Length: 358
Figure: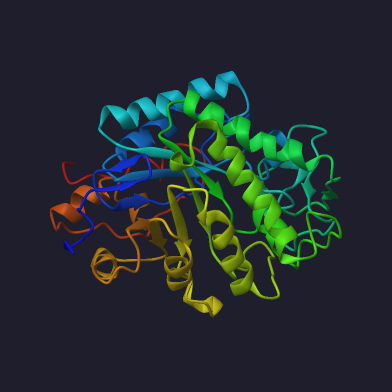
């Protein structure tokens, strides 16, 4: 088998990667208050287009699916036009970019949504978490109590993902990624701690898998499964998530997704959760696997050499090294990941990090 390192090209479904350095999805909170793409967002993604694959920050598919301040949406034609500026900028530099679709479900506060827009979840269980809210100097507020979705509403939520996928392709994205971790809506349906339903959407493992699989199928139906990836992290407790048997849950999920022909599985290793997520996904998923979580380039190359994954996603390193892939290729020194203003509005701490060229 040919030696594979970070600079080796790859093909994941219909996605063509010039290298295996993936830019991880990272919330950066630079969108306008109404979820519109801003000029500095265009520049941010343009600067990082040397990555083999860019996965955007989480993008909400409906106003109900929004939970955080200054996160972007893709719910109307004006937002399609805004994202088209991003994809054009990335493509002009030869990059490949997919949009991560993120419905937060119960991980939301009303102050971050348009007036009158509620929060929904599989069950009426509030997340024990706090979110930042702009205004009055900023504050941290507890997540709202969500309303449990009625069974006849759920197909409409699934269709929100389908329509968002259509808009993503209209905006020029090469593919989409289903965000299935971090305590957001698909993970809420999967997990016993957040899904207490007794209908076809909850209870048994088969029923708890139903929403995630149906969303993946809906996204794949737009223009093929080979443009659709998904992100999971078994046993990730983030945003007050708990499952009684996460290994069994995610083995079941991967088995259910295998027949769809999806472009890739993206997972975080998170050694503290007690499950080898990389080995789980590598063994249970039939397609390419992107691995993630605090890798150095050297560790990443070693992981690829032993086939722990097919590509490696970097987060913090891409914040302070906009030309990370180029630096790795040149074996150049990397900037420290220590930085201020990571989530503040404005260009500082966002698009002001130097490249090797200065």
